[in-house]
Image (tube, rainbow, N blue to C red; front, side, top):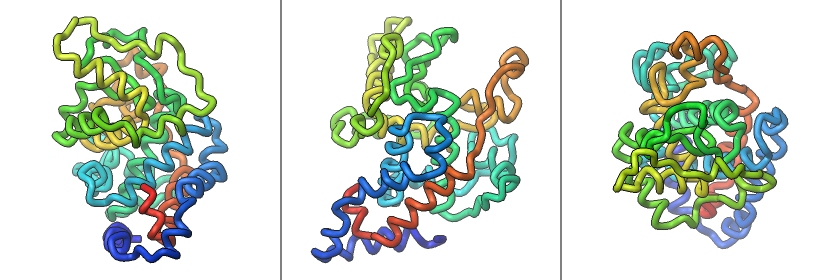
Length: 288
């Protein structure tokens, strides 16, 4: 698997026979079947739609290794590789991976998979996998750049974590055809309060409001955005409460009752199965 990304990229450019393309016609459906059959989805920590959607966004990432977003999500863990890493969640959970006998190998395929593995556990804690989740109203983050939204409860202010995030936002803003809303919303009910977009400071620049709205109606964007924030500002002092709870860097009052992010080996297995499927069916990447 170590050279999977490079091999897959090269093969997807050269292998376009008619028979192979015909065989790849059901690739998205096959990816969703892998998710449905996985022990990860059987955890019932989120709706079936969440696992199906995550599987498809992950498949897209595997098939597009040249993407700046994917390059960040698949990068090796930054130093220090410990729970003290302030920004990189992959470094924070390295020891946890090893305690669970999940090898956190420094190759792109593994690092991409583990970024999505952490994201999955994060969504379990932040939103129970509901794509349209709005901000926690019990918290004071009601300004447009602070208000959290989506399954991972990121914010518009987090786009400062990396220069790739605003272009990603503007790209999806101009073309929502790849949002996968129909997949993520199946049998999921959105609460009226979740649909509210916040702007308590009455900012003239409505980017924060627009970001909240897009995040809740374009879950594929929410996943890609969070994958970068997780690696650039998702460490011991970063964006995500459940990660800070895991490390123990929340305020004493919050730390007493917060829920730590958990890593689920069965979800790693699900993403590994998707990688294997795409490795064996290279032309399937024409669907993503």
